[in-house]
Length: 250
Image (cartoon, rainbow, N blue to C red; front, top):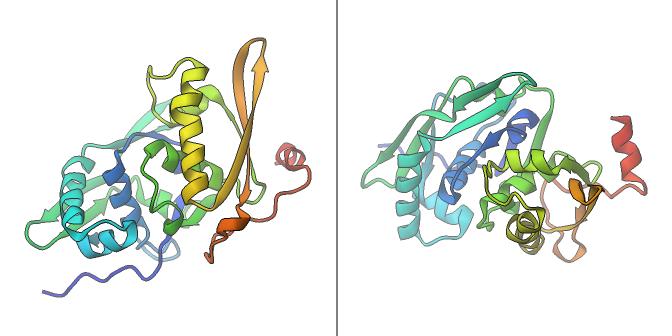
């Protein structure tokens, strides 16, 4: 049997609409998906199936090979049931990530078949795309950190993300958890920022926008951390002197 070809690039490209959709994945499911997406060239036709091996999984995420086997199997078993919720302003649509997720027992590999609904979000069929190097998030251990990182990367040209608190809660699929902003800040926002800053080479600050005593929106400002500059193809551009003015013009 011919060995699966290992990815030559670790560039992740997603449509902004997918990044801004609501979904919930556990850590291993997210890692499996990103390892698969890293093999997709958005300029070319989507492969009918994508294989992720335990060897490549272990190398990307720095885990022992024996754990990679277990992580892949568990992720493949549960990923099929995961979906994405998209909004068009009126309707909510649910779509599956994959229509097939097969783990080859004894061979240490998972083969994924993305659904026809997801494929356009991973290709140049969308005009608004976000790309980043998988190595930036390979060491993240929190799904909230993964999601916040991708939300920030949509605005890497300006270094500013402005988002309503309620929208952030929806995108993170928090449900009824952390309804009080203090809880959201302590359990989600602060830990995510700290992990991204420690592991992804980005410096982040944020401020709150309030109405009365209620925190309505958040303004994140971020830039490449000088002490952790990475030789990657997704480097952030310098932060403008007045980034909010740029946002107003978009």
